[in-house]
Image (cartoon, rainbow, N blue to C red; front, side):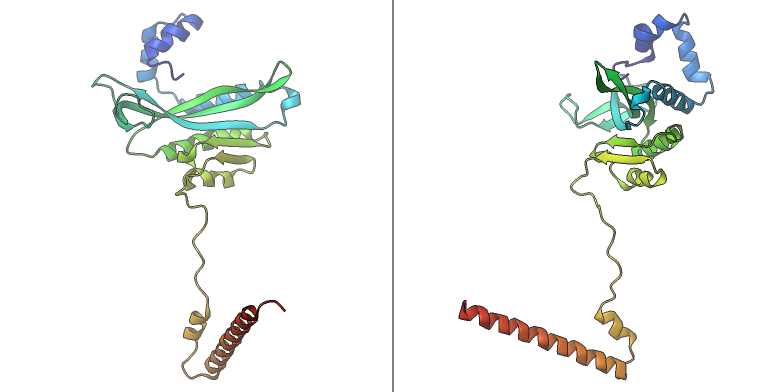
Length: 243
């Protein structure tokens, strides 16, 4: 799919072999036909699930999330812009083109008496700078997950860029969905600490000079003295050496 740089290339290498429709028919369909292309994703997923043999029905299926760059060399392509690409080999970390968020389904099949996962592309969404790639990824997963209601174990695979709250939190929405991905070094993997409820807060709530406040201060002071005496005793014992 990534090797098809244009509709013309896709038609020349694939579509012309399975249909008698002309190239212009596909141009017209992409430009003017009002179709819900997101339905193709669910239909493709349903067809891929039917490929799973009955003996492998308990094996997990994987949803692979990633993004890919499509470089453009003309200046009149719609929505083309300068995009950062860490894998670019053009002397710069930027290229002019489109960025697509992709979702692929991997289903288990038999291959020479061994389990082999067959990769089936489900859909692509073009990212525009006014939105977020994470939002596109989350919407694609939500759209296709109802198809997997009969599967006990669906694993979402992604790289460290996607392991962020927007995508990670979607796991809580589905009982059969898990996630495997690398976490960045700067990722926050814990909640904020709870509000402090130490001795300072308790004393502030007590009225100055009240009996309760005085008793609490005495107990705290006594505890500090006991702790100090234990520390001093331990230092003396250590200084004398072994018995």
